[in-house]
Length: 120
Image 1 (spheres, helix red, strand yellow):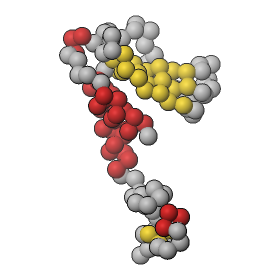
Image 2 (spheres, helix red, strand yellow):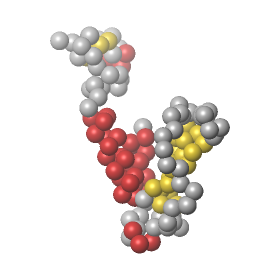
Image 3 (cartoon, helix red, strand yellow):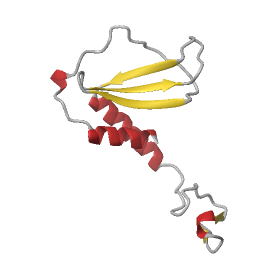
Image 4 (tube, one colour):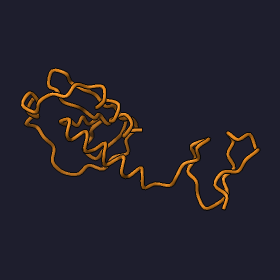
């Protein structure tokens, strides 16, 4: 879902020259922070020609309730490409119901009990 949201946002936003992109805030966090995120939101700032990814609804060791990551278009495009590559390596999905197919026979509710998809 995140990859699709990034792709859609990149398609709908204008391409700006890198010279017009605003400089990042000087209060940059460098390091690792492990959290389980409750919600993600992506956005575009037309004035700064930058993109954002906001992670919220979690608890962290630092007492944060949300994190906003700002990025340039090329960084968002790189993230979308990486997500796409990871997803393409996953198990194939049933064309009818979208469930991951495994080596076991798959009963597909969308076939109304009349077909089994993915049987060997």
